[in-house]
Image (cartoon, rainbow, N blue to C red):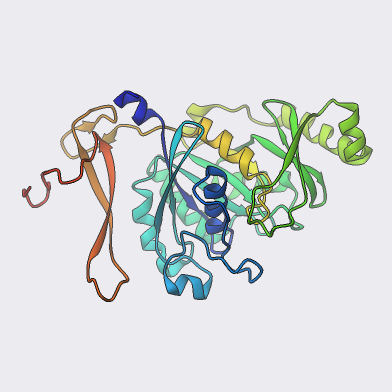
Length: 337
């Protein structure tokens, strides 16, 4: 693989949301589908007795929240995926602001019952200011929540950004059975989750026009889906990546991270749409992502939690070139190598 192909296949994104919207759970499920782990842990559930990979500190396991940012990596479908899991809780938000500097895009997680919340608004403003494209994942649709059209309206009114659904939940009043893909006109019907979200969820793909599929869903649910699709096609925005990049449009997905419902369709579509590393502005020049000269910036320094080793971990975002172990580089501020 050439150097340029290696750069182009990278996807680095942060997950942002209000506390308890399900960031760490979604991260864990993306790792599960990416093959980085074979059994997903959870943040709070006693049924699994397995903690989330990104919640590695003792305090995080005890409190069921993330307090530091962690970086996780896996390969999927030819892409090298870097996920920056950030704390949603306001007490630790400084960590999130720093981490967003390293992301090429952001996934905004919204709780289907609560809609857009205070911390989400703050983090959205930071992303918009920095020109980070935002993708929206409406989570917890296995619970009763708001109507998807109401959520689209709220995103537009409170964040000033139009939403374009890439898929749509199939069902009525929070009783969802699958996800409709607007691009392929097919529906993924999900099997019932019996493993508390620890294993991948089986799904069957059907065409929306298939008579057998109509029978499977029932007349009322099928008709509701057809009406929703029609309304979206007539009144909704068309997908336009230039508008996404400009912060005027957010692609919207639906699912439930806890039960793995809709996670795989989201991951595949997101990797297809998400931007590869872009050029970055430095003090004197713009650094090209395709340049083979090494350059990077440190976005976070964290003390290790091992009492026997008082060391620090440095998190660094590579802007160009390739990092080689033991290489000598110039530190811009101090002028030292």
